[in-house]
Amino acid sequence: MNKFDLYEVITQKIIDRLESGIVPWQKPWQNAGGMPRNLVSGRPYNGINFWLLLASEFKSPFYMTFEQSLSLGGNIIKGQKSTMVVFWKILEKETSPGTIEKTPFLRYYNVFNLEQTEGIDISKIPAATVHDHDFVPIQEAESLISQWLDKPKILWGEDHACYIPQRDTVCMPDPRTFFHDEQCFSVLFHELTHSTGHSSRTGRHEKIKDHAFGSQDYSQEELVAEMGAAYLCGLSGIELKTIDNNVAYIKSWIRAFKDDPKVLVLAAAQAQKAVDYILEHQLSPLGDSLQNQIEKENEESPVEALSC
Image (cartoon, rainbow, N blue to C red; front, top):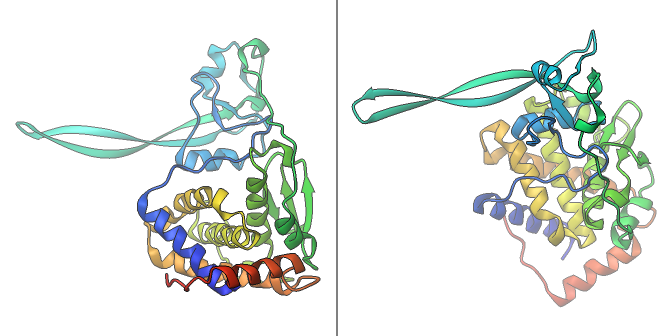
């Protein structure tokens, strides 16, 4: 199976999972911060709130309203700005006997991170735990990265995974904090796919007009990065352990386009160009061990290309 067949096979797997229904995306690592959640109720935030809070600069995962900070014996530090959290409330109105009309109504409230407060008794703050396991690099995935000639700088041990275009740098959590080694590489592949859009590589980012979080341009780039991650996981032979979370992430962003299937096709095309760029700039094409693996799979179990 050559890499072009693999692109189509992985795309079809993603489409099949999108059509069958998938579990929500799960953060595949656990550092001291953990998942954004309300300090008082302990409930994690979901939907767009999860992404907004996860992308913040704060290390603490705990948020609260102004009133909640007071109830805990603390207060908000002067000059701190709140973050808006949105939720849907269903309004019910009886239009005729026995008929109830339900209307979704968007509401919001403001929250502050624990780091924006003072005076809260430390005993009221849950202890944060860090997941730790013996990380073992996966040879095929490691080869793709190590042999990429003009790859960006990779910084390990950060609180979040992200790509910083201005510095051409990928930030990654400590690999030991990931629940599984394959998930670590999936997240790294996502950020590395982002980096292919840099002006020194494909220049894809120069065509993005709106860089605001949640905008359609931003959402499209996230789809490209996750499709690219899925392809690179396939090339590394680890997609069976990562694809469900890949699809869940894709689902969370494709909603910005009202689940328009054409958006996925466009993202797949851009992701293929991104992955091709990485493969074309290897010290040895595809990496010797990876090339041998693909040729062996092609001989043992030829797969007919699937159209998306």
